[in-house]
Length: 283
Image (cartoon, rainbow, N blue to C red; front, side, top):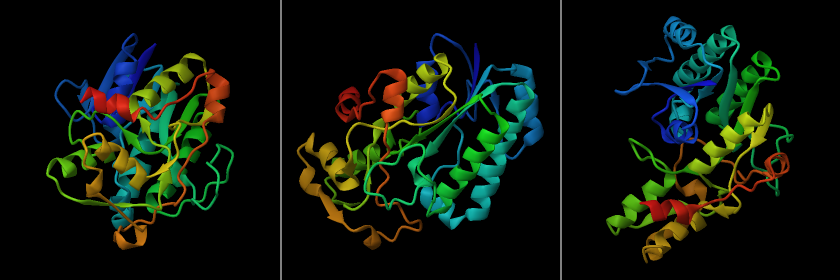
């Protein structure tokens, strides 16, 4: 099968490329070595690329990420993310490809006590989550029976450029022996991105279609997560807990962003792991 990865040099796209090592993979991005440069706001370019490559599966890993950026720039976020990614969806539909799309636990309000399941009602409290919710609906309507929407939270791992994820943020701060304030009231079950990529490949191989949660096996606060990272280097005293309201973040975050992975476990007969130690051991 031929796989087309949009955004193949980001955190998720890079790991997905590695997980597809035994498949034919074409990467579309903004770096040298990519098959082609693309712009989400140039639909005709996207249509030409899609028809030229004619993939069996399209993986949409391109997204103008940033929860606070989306909140501060809602129109630009909609134009780039919702409209731009919808161009990819329409182009993929024209070549009859299957689509995989990464969503987020931020499609939920965060008021539940238990981890969210795939069947819980979405009710995002920030722009980022609302845009993900819209794209989920677009994927379902355009690709009935031929899509994988996978919701994640707290992705971390190797990034070819930028190194922006939470683990790298903590490591840069403690390396300089600087204190870092971290919310103690935002809970999630983070996951090593390599585990997500492998799960997406497995789901495709087993012809799964629908929405599924892919998250780690430990529910914890961002403060607890940060301390786990710093503790490995004997610098846990640099991590300071604070309530979210004191951080001055533009976008509200759900207090509970944990995701239930029972559906994945039952479908695959496999467990998804947090795997923080595994990633830190690779650095």
